[in-house]
Image (cartoon, chains in turn yellow, brown):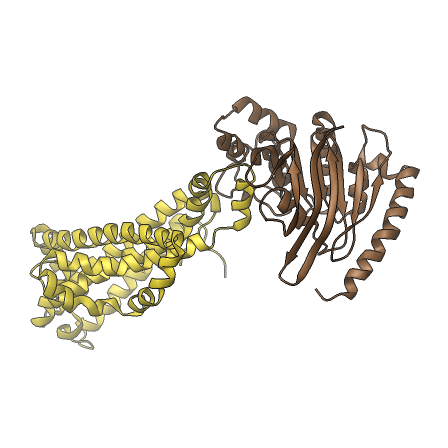
Amino acid sequence: MMTPGSRQERWILRAGVLVLIVLIWEGLCRVGLASEFWVSRPFLIAARLRDAALSSTLWFHMGVTVTETVFGFLFGAMAGILAGFALARWRRAHVALDPYLMGVYALPRVALAPLFIMWFGIGIPSKIMLAISIVFFILLINTYVGVQNVDQDLVNAVKTMGAPPRFVTRRVVLPSCVPWIFSGLRISMALALTASVVGEMLAAQYGLGFMLARASGTFDTTGIFMVLIVLALLAVGTYNLMSRLEKRLLHWRGDTITV
Amino acid sequence: MPAKVSVTNLSIAFGATQALEGVSLTVNDGEFVSIVGPSGCGKSTMLNVIAKLLPPSDGSTRVAGVEGNGASAAKVGYMFQKDTLLPWATTLDNVYLPMDVQGVRDSRKAGALIDMVGLTGFEGHFPRQLSGGMRKRVQLARLLAQDPDVLLMDEPFGALDAQTRLIIQEEFLKIWERSRKTVLFVTHDLQEAIALSDRVVLISARPGRVKAVYRVDLARPRHVEEVMAHPRFMALFQEIWASLKQEVLASREKPQ
């Protein structure tokens, strides 16, 4: 296949897909082949989105979800990275904890939501905890594996220059872990958002997940689609942010592989 | 002449495999000594012991008269066969690395070294943006930036294509003849060993022992291509190769 050349061409192609989907969707409803009750209609969704954006409700709920996601992501990531380095440093701790960490890691952690809601209430803290519980383990494992995968030849080369262990850690081990940590961060960002929304759907008074649950409870398909669109935009936005940061920090690798 | 590197009765075993057995050799100050031998005879292992990356099973090594572990590490510069440039550091930062270890960044010296290896203009390039030959040159500059008393080199040019290798050997020889550092050089390439060295040490098939030592009595300064056409070079090559070949064949008969 030919690679579509210019940036402009790419965006025209993409916008074309959007217009096509909207037209088919709207058209199917208008001619009566699809029911508005089940699938709503693009123009209705757009109108709802506009109204919600003009009132403060959408921004308020979005703010709650973003707060939970960001705090869950930051705390979970920091704790996970530190724990990953600690486990790599103290082999004995790793040997002792490995099966338990793997057990919790393998557990679908959204299943912890009911427990966290019991412990931390239906407010923001329980969603942050849920996000942390997911992000922490991803970063822990990625960081640990990153340290294990440090090129031993690089370490030896720097050692033969007479470098003390601290220098080796700072100049060799840390930078070589960065790609691993970043791939963990990229996955974590999306999962922190998922955790917040799932938590809100289960029990909350605010947040996009709460809006989603409420819309579903009242058979408000248009409301559901509106929230989904907002969530998709949020997810794409954060993903782009991470990719940009990664490109910047990892420019020595050339084209970063995005999964 | 004072011995800069001395290896005394060195033995190294990995489990049941005896890599080196009772190896003794000395490298004098300012001398260029090559070690040749069949694959798996423990040549690289010996360098690792001298660089204190591995403990010996028996015997000892001394660098500049200092025995044991940890001491005088900065005096030994080690160039590995594998590319050991930091991939996240530019040419300049890689050359700065040994200076950073020593706590003194000398930008003029770094610039001069980069110039010496012909990489002016590539200071800001990352290793992946450089060719294999250029990366070797950066490693050479980094090695010299460390300003070690002794250079340990483990097949430093082995991974290069034949043409590039010849050019880098020539450049390296020129740089070395100016600085006259003590060099212990491990190679598979007998021509390279003879062309560069003052002495060639032949290690036997496993367990590695010193089988013979040859003095390369070719005048310096040398040029690699010219030296290789010299009758004395050819005589030496035939003499050493006859002996080395036996070891290579012997090592092939043994299980790895």
